[in-house]
Amino acid sequence: MSDWGPVFVAVVLFILLTPGLLIQIPGRNRCIEFGNFQTSGVSILVHSILYFAFSCIFLLAIGVHVYMGS
Image (cartoon, rainbow, N blue to C red; front, side, top):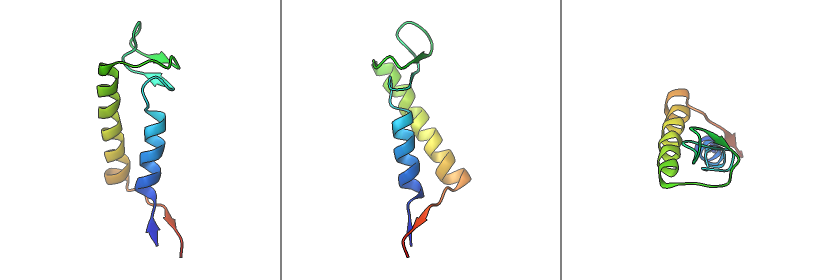
């Protein structure tokens, strides 16, 4: 069986943590902005760190596993 857990977690976190799509930390005018479709270098760095931290938590600490196939 194939373990699709890491792939699923990576894709969902990538979509949710894309800077400016749903949320931007830090925003251009405020600390947090929602749905502004803009980004900056600092925002990309913060979202990259959050992506790495959440992926480590979900994959290593919690151990998400999704098995597909026979």
